[in-house]
Every structure is written in C-alpha cells, then in structure tokens.
Length: 284
Image (cartoon, rainbow, N blue to C red; front, side):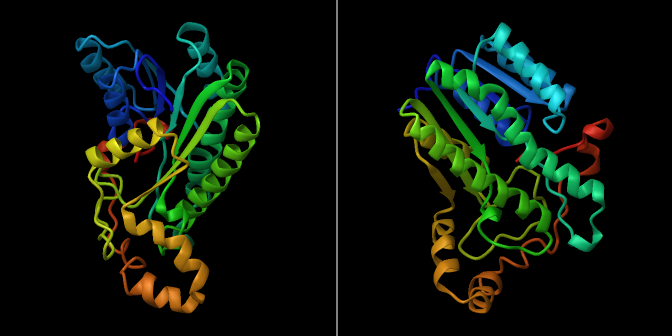
C-alpha cells in the first residue's frame, strides 16, 4: 500500500482547486514535502505562504506543463533539490466548453498540449528515476468525460479519452516490472471548483464536492486502487456503452439522464480569474 506519511508529493495545477486540496490533505496526512507546480505565480505564493506558516515544507515552481522545456527544467530542479517524488498527481487541465465548430486551432492545441501531452511529459520526466528506485505512484486526474461523449466537450472529452488509455497502458507496463510502482486513474464527473461553472448536474450524478472527492482520491492512492470513478453511477458507464446500441444509449443515458444537455449553460471560470499571459489554464 502506498504511504502518504513521510512521502514527497508533487501536484501539477496545485495552487488552486482540487490540486490545492490534494496537496493540503497530503501534508495533513503526514507527507514530509510538497512540491507544487502551477502557472499562476500569485496563487503559488499565496498557498506556499499559508502552508509554510503551518510548518510544512513546500516547494513551488511556476511551470506550464504544455511546454516540454519548462517541464524538463523544473523536473531536474526538483530531483536535484527535493528528490524524486514518491507520489505524482497529474492534475493540471483545461476545458473550453463550446461546440467543436467554434473552436480555434489554438483552443484545440492548447487543450491537448495541457491535458494529454502535459500529463505524459511530466510523468516521463520523473518515471525513469522512479523505476530505478523501484517505487512510485502516478495518479492522473482524468474525467468521466473519458467514458462518454458529450456535446460542447468534444476536444476535452478527446483529451480525457486519450489520457485514460495512456494511464491504463502505463499501469500494465509498470505492473510487469513487479516493483512497488503503481498507477491510479481518477474519472470524476463535474466537480464544484469553478472550472465547470454553469453546468447542470446529470440525473443521479450530483456535482461533486471538492473535499469529498479529494478524500476519495487519497484513500484510493493509499489502497493502490487502479480506477476511481465518482459518483458511483459513473461505474455503470462502461457496461451500458458496451451492451446498449448507440442510439439507445443516447436516448436513455445521454438524453434521459440529461448528460448531453449538462453543458448547455457552461460558463467556466470568470474572466477575472484568468491567468496572466498566454499561460492561461484552469485546474479541476
């Protein structure tokens, strides 16, 4: 079982939202060092000051995970000064939330660069050292959007489908090494952090409270769970998509459970919360 106590934890997108909570809860559970990567310098400073005032060892880095050179440089600095993370939370992500025909090429590329290539780049930067050490836990915050199509989420869903397949394949590779190496993939529905402001919760899938999903994620890590799907109804999606004809699935699940209309009034984070310069991104 993965132990959070006395561990070194790294969280991408860790200065706000679920990322911030994951870091805080890890420290409260006895983690000895927390490394926070984020693109928002102001948020980084604020969370570092708060946690350091509580006596915790916190290291912050301003990193855009969409830029491989920044990832490589920051990863080397972390390994040289803090050490190889015991637990890596791939949390940074963005969503555009509009019909595909209205996406710019920048919208598409930015989403894939952060949600897919960024996750892979961060993991690749640390994984060889984890393998050499013989231990490590990679946790990727994917999404229930990786299990079901949804209007106004085409590129976001594509990114989460991709990262889900990657994460599960990585798990098999690491299991074959027969070392203390683990992968946990989290596929939550909408979380009440502001990233999905304006969405309407589908039937039987209430919008998740940040504190509860954070607690569930950390429990899954400590138990070395392979997949964490929340809320419970999300566990049925793979089965229903497998047994129901597509049109019937659309009618019963997509429209009947109001999944396909959940993004109709999506607003996202207020413009005032936007991150400066072209590094703008949101965290789940």
